[in-house]
Image (cartoon, rainbow, N blue to C red; front, side):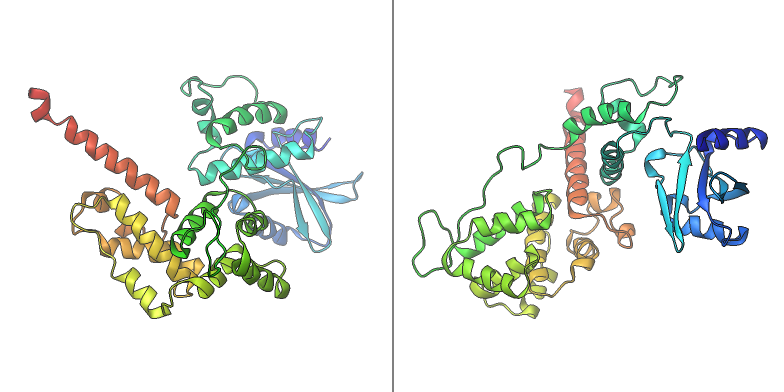
Length: 358
């Protein structure tokens, strides 16, 4: 019924229902002037919505509100409910189905939409990811949530590695910290470097990372984490690595670690990607020592890269790294962009006019 109300209301006002939302369950305590600000601040996606009218629905004993967005509504980005002081408002879009998809499907769609955003993709990229022709206009009705689940599932297989719980994963190397190394154990510094890199790559909850870390520890090293968990059962993996670094790592002061990071410069003949990877190891040590806050990690990394890259390096210019310091990319995004640019430049050199003439 709510969907029919949305469509009929839009028809009566001669506005496109695809650009509109219907918000139901709004009590009379909220006047017209307070509803729109609440919707705009509830989520970033609704920040530009405009209230077009309010109607009392007798069957619900509450008001329904019609809102319009600047462009077609993306159902995956619209919250199904909005929590307010006196209860919950329900949000309906034209993409709603008479028989709603299971809650698990809706949750999957939202997570997939968020994942695509982090990868720099949108739903408009789905045809290309699925091997379809993105240039063909879609004249058919919008797919149902179940159809989206199937289509996005295929795309997910292409862009997401198998979940670590459903497939074998590389176990961490052993470390004990004891006076007599156990078979297969290596020195602490190489172990810490390898472990930190592996833990960053695994897309699993922090608790699972901590469990896997504990699996590879023996003797005094395991005792350090056990003691840490006694005082804080939910201790983060970052804090575990920091405690191990304090117990078994080099006795470098905070200032020493930070100075090494600030003094790191791109060496002659060194690729920018290699420099960034070398710098990242120093940054991680600075973070573990407390010299750099995790929240400032991306900004600090990019600022040092801008300082450390050789003057007028073409990658620095082409990727506009100086101009991006207020909105720095993550490490994974940055290294991806740099390596792609290096490959592009290398291909340009190989295919230069001089070689083609030969």
